[in-house]
Length: 207
Image (cartoon, rainbow, N blue to C red; front, side, top):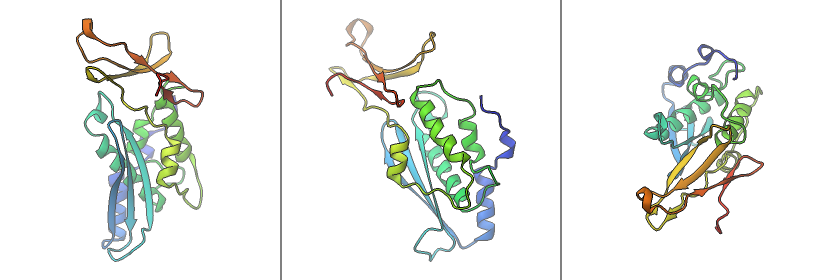
């Protein structure tokens, strides 16, 4: 468990309020850089004035679509909020050592099991949050895509798209795979993925 006080981190709304107060003629834009069935990557740009051609600061964020919880319905919205928060932090609207927004820290309050895809994403985010430099670290979209493991392509069988199953077994070992959507007595074999040393899942079924 990572020890920190959420109250020490500002909300994105609070940072935005400061930005609009300082730059009432400023501009904020967001863009969907990647959208799949399993995740979104959003970029955000801040401009000091509406006439500025180049952004003053930028931010990137990724959210994975889950089968339960807030990201089952609002992964896109959460990614946009986080991207805006990152752009504001890069512009200087963050306390020293508190680059992450309260929304981001809420999502990474505890570690996922070692070796899981979720843990790999959390490690990338924490490393970024921990940076305390005079100049922000600039990530391109391709940098972010490479840093955050991409979930394997959804599997299909003769009954159509298969259902994703992931989590941690009672033994403590993580699992990730797809099961057939047909009734139990008609189901095709499940396709359980293997975990690489780098923390990414893959299915070695001939693809």
